Amino acid sequence: MRAKRLVANLPVSDIESAKTFYTDFLGLSLEEFNMGWVARYTSPETGANVQLVTHDASAPVDSVMSVHAEDVDAAYAEAERLGYEIVHPLTTEPWGVRRFFVRAPDGNVLNIVAHHDEDD
Image (cartoon, rainbow, N blue to C red; front, side):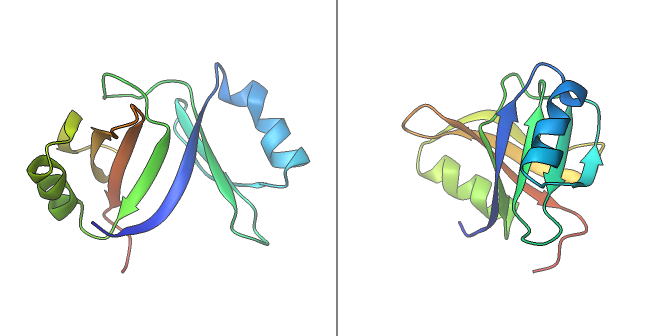
C-alpha cells in the first residue's frame, strides 16, 4: 500500500464549538468541507490540516486517522492478505469516497480512503 496523505481525525463532541480553536488559534482557517459529523480545516499558507469528527456516519467505530491511498482496492486486498482486522468493509460511500477501516496491530483504527476526484 502507498499512502498519499495522512490526516488526523480528532474526536469532538460538537464541531461548531471546537472549530474556533483550530481555525483561529492554529490558523487552519480554510474549511475544506463540513458534513455536520466531520469537517476538515486547513492552513491556506502551509497546507497543515486536521479533521474534526463527532462520529462516523456509516462505520461501526471511529478512526484516528484518514490515510489517502493511491489504490484503495489494492490496499484492501493487501490488508486482507496480511490478516489485518477489517472493521468496516470496502465501501463506496454516498458522499463520494471509497474506503475501508482497518485495525492496526496496536489497536488504532485507520480509515483507508480514496476520493473520486483525487489525482495521482
